[in-house]
Length: 169
Image (cartoon, rainbow, N blue to C red; front, side):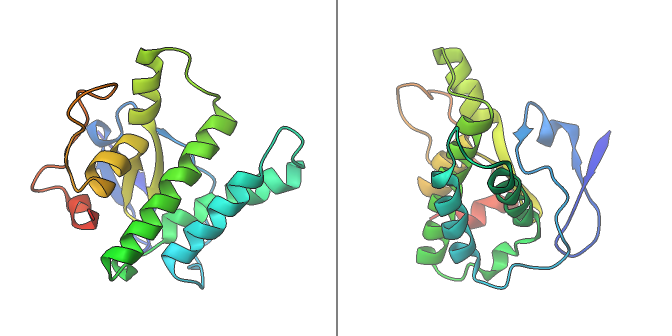
């Protein structure tokens, strides 16, 4: 069985249930079909700025605007990230935006097991891909190298055939 996902090209892309298994994708609001008019790394910088401004007293409109903006990640064209510096900026901003969003929406995990689950399942759809916090940290920012010890002993690695590996920095 598969689940259709929005694709920046406008075509439905089917991801297998295995690819979506145990994912908590936070940017589920419908996105507009228009592409953000700024560079992807600048877009995530602006998202992070808004995410960091969220607090318990945030207006409902600010929260709605933030969630609507995160839905725009689904129309980002990752092929526009041309340099390693652009990829690094994009994915660092994305990671921290997703982390703040998850802490705001879900709250902090309260055990080591829940922490592992939090980092491995909390995800955003970006373009045609889905990235979890753990995948961004270990597969993108750490150039596909699993953390050798500690909390995430079984950190993921992208396979040689995983299209997302081309974004590793």
